[in-house]
Image (cartoon, rainbow, N blue to C red; front, side, top):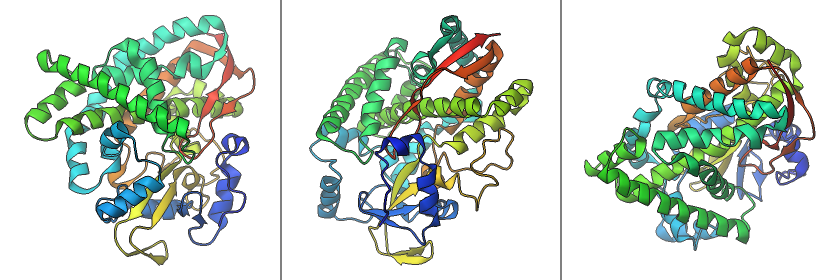
Length: 406
């Protein structure tokens, strides 16, 4: 049991770190009824579970069809035709050879070399956005700047129309938020409808690219489908998952990253004076406030890990955000240090399901913060920060700032 642990509270959203520290201090892996599983909060426990291929995201490798249906109903992931077809069967939710096959199909688009070719396009887009927003002097960093960038970049990579980016971001939020612990009927309806709309959009794009292919991800995946490397449903599900995974988490870390600089002004001044620290600063932003704090795993067989035996089907919650503040793994873990080295954090996960888009997220962060600090001489908080609640995501919903253009 975990007394007082309430991720849905406003207090937790604003400052989850004391709750994580309390979890790390408990012996073993505490059981949390709200999750019906065990929480791993220490760095080494999280790392072990994430790296072990016997620990899986989906249930197909160890559960009978009847058991899978029972788990699906228990998680309230049933009676959602589009969600069950395209979200619950995505690359994120499957394991083993099928997961590896789908990952290989899209991996060439997410290498550092391939993504570096986007730098000029992303830089131009960020500069145009700054031209517009800096004239206001005071604005919400999330709504005014961060919210649009990831959707535009991912849409450009996949091949969707630029004007659709804001709508796709809202759909992605509706889909991703349903993975959190609060699965209300309203959230369920929004997640299903967003998945249906995503399907319709991608199906239309698929038909257009079959006739006139371009140098984009969906055209490349159509080629992979023709070659028999993946099915049509797998193609739609994979592109949909890339859209879901890359929007909200990048927006969140942009917000929490700027917030960390604002409440640690000496670190912002240091970064302004030494722009060469930007790569390590970006890494520290991900460690300091992981945008995806929580993922689950199942034990696919009876096994021994983290100091004890566990039966097949045991569910584990991996608290990446807590692991990244573990004093057993990091010196002064609650301090924000833009020059921190080494910084082997778990914000992108580990093992077979390590985040496919980690290089893209870092590229976006590097370009945005480099341009923002170059184009301003001062940035300050100008109001109260509103934070997301829940375990699935962490970041500011609203981050009001006042800037002085350089």
